Length: 555
Picture 1 (cartoon, helix red, strand yellow):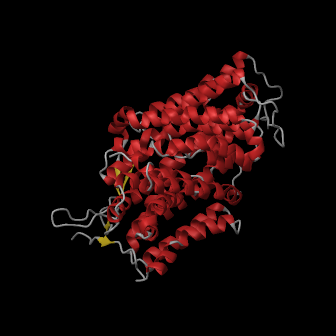
Picture 2 (cartoon, rainbow, N blue to C red):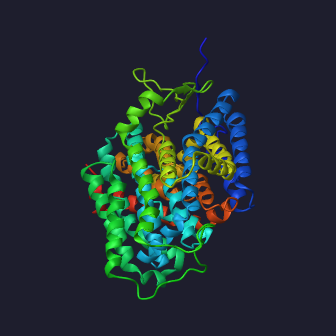
Picture 3 (cartoon, rainbow, N blue to C red):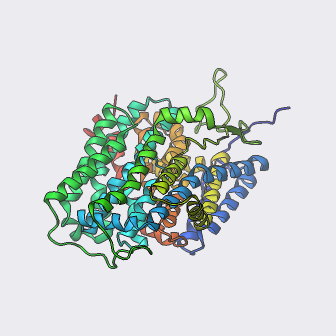
């Protein structure tokens, strides 16, 4: 006899305010323990997960077996593919450090852009955007933060600035994955969604280079390097707008990032700031780098691993390659006691009809080990290892050391994704979303903040779009707002939540070997996240209500 389907209830206490407060408890516990009580992040994540399980079972009435299965499903997804990316990226990074190549890279960047204010634009914004477009899933933050640390940035600055910079490109990350997922759950054409997002985020692509430098040095010092900020932002925003509107979501970040990097480096051949700003501390040399050789041959060696990484990540991101790889190496496992046993209810899901009843939620773990981005990074690391004349034994030793280094990070990611999946399958996330949706004529603003909340909860713009995309469309239709605008706003607003989600913060702290200081990073970026999300919300409100901004919405 088949097991009965459990339908979500978004007001389990029969009081919208109380239900919303209870739904928020796991997130408040997680972030509060990290930011206010300085509890180690893996312990905070485990306690947050425990709260989510107890609330799903005890308050929402979700059967205990699906509750525990959703926690296990989230934990598995946290380890693969996300933890797999972090593990192999840190392994790759450590191989370059052990050969002294990171010091050469640092020295070369210091010659090209001696001012740290320009370095943060070039590395965290432009270079980071390329990895966002190719891979996503925390890759750009890890790479940018590690490079900034080697350039002499303090760990807090390296982490915080990398997180702030990794915003405007996120909606088109991993070859447009968030937009493609949004199209799937809303039924709105992916090109139309790409156009709408492409008429929102370019404004912030021009702003973020200024913003990240302002967060670093203040307003007056930012004005001294305004040409670099203008060139970086404009050369990113224009291709972002053009590709998003006239091609689609797939290559937006890659084209814009390459254009931005090239434009900034060209500018630096003819212009440098009058005053070179200095960091509070010198750059950190690695253990094996006594004298930095920045000869042309050595510079080529230093850039080789990063070129290899870019090529491998780009190859692994091509849909045709993923499709071919998945034919041979992507076993799928239906999660027992969860798959097709939980169903969303109206208004999060469309109102069921006899012709089209509500479809239960799927829960299938796809172990696409060959096509996973982390595997591409591992391939790049091994290929570089042989070029750099590592023996197989040496690479195995470095990999073992890396595994020990990131063990708590992997535990934390598994617990946080477990928390996110429990809230998703119990309906607690939708309770929070519905509270923001009940804001009447101000819904365009608060609907955008819903996207921010979704990414802050899940750590992924893609997951937020899957989570709230249908709700945004339904609520927009009920309130007389263009559904295309609000579906896109979920993604555009969500990118500003990327810097405060615990997963991204953890990736940054792991990459900089600053594990245990996540609370400081959260406090550093929180204001910037709220402020930028508010600005996106205001833009969306204008596009919904005020002429001529309303003309920006595709008809």
